Length: 476
Image (tube, rainbow, N blue to C red; front, side):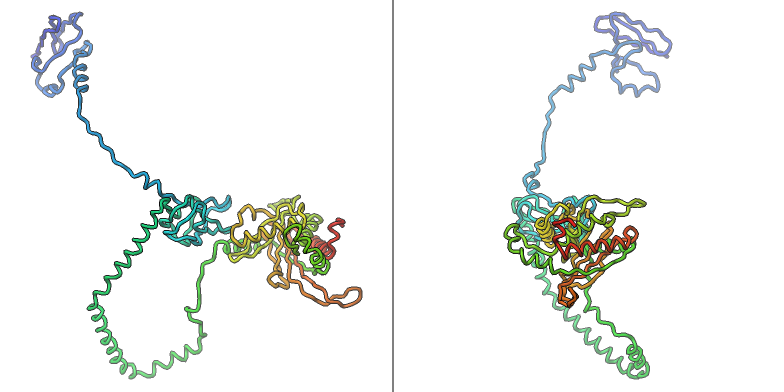
């Protein structure tokens, strides 16, 4: 059966809706039909339709009345309670972190060598609190703000990278209060240990039992005298090694490992060959003794022997440009500039700071630059840029008393000059045997690029300039 629902509209008009195939009449003046639950008869199986209080008729437009009722309901005042959680921004903003700075383009990480401060110590802004050791230089980690060190995040010996956090610093000085209690608590906890004496006595009681058991076993062992004698005879023939307590194992520093790797690579890559010569140091030493006071008074630095050898090496490299060149694959790169590296021994390892454009320097400028770089290298404050590059290296082993040596090339260079100690030796001068201050010099070169002829001419040029410095003035 089909049901018909009739309802008076607001205007008094009536309409009919027939479910199924029935026809419904709709007055044009009343386009909307709204049905209530009481006035509708649902067919069997449509009981769930009751959830919808307003249904639009097919072909009719939606009535706006129900929407207004819903909107009106939403606009009713609602009691809402707002709450928030407070954060202590002052306490969090009081803490700053010290991080590892950038260490250079070719350095990606380093080892935290040592802490210069302890938790609870007062530090100023930009004051070093730790040192990071790389394979080239040692870098300081400075405090970003003035305050008190609260704690360290990493430990000595850890590998760190640029940006790694190593310490937390309290700008208000609250770090000291946090460190003191942590140190006292362990001591307080350690105090309650004495109370348990009974376990200690019980541990002492089994000891005599253990001592009695070996005593009881000794007669059994004594009943077998033949087996013990052979072991001493075999041990007597074996070599006696020192006890392990007399040995110390210390990890290699990153700088030492880097030097070892580079030197081994140099030995495996280059065709190393060394040629020697000797230099009479009489004239250069006389020049230094005659003008040392005037030189110090004018330039504020002492006149040494290194400046004479640097100027001699510059002229020798200009006369033999192949010594200043380097092999790159199947090509040879000639350098039209002279940057001389000076090997400096430090407690942590060997470093080679560079004299930039040494050809344009005079004696005073060379001495000042060498002193500045040597102090930085010894203090560990030398930078990567001050050691990068270099076309030729000079190593002065004579300051340590070396009489003769064969230095190893500093890659990627092609040659290195070795200076040695000055020793008075009998020399024939003008047909007479006289004592002369003599120095052996050595040139180790890459025989793949440099022939023996160029190497010998190179050393001869250094010998001529050092023995007669006037050649520098006359350019001969």
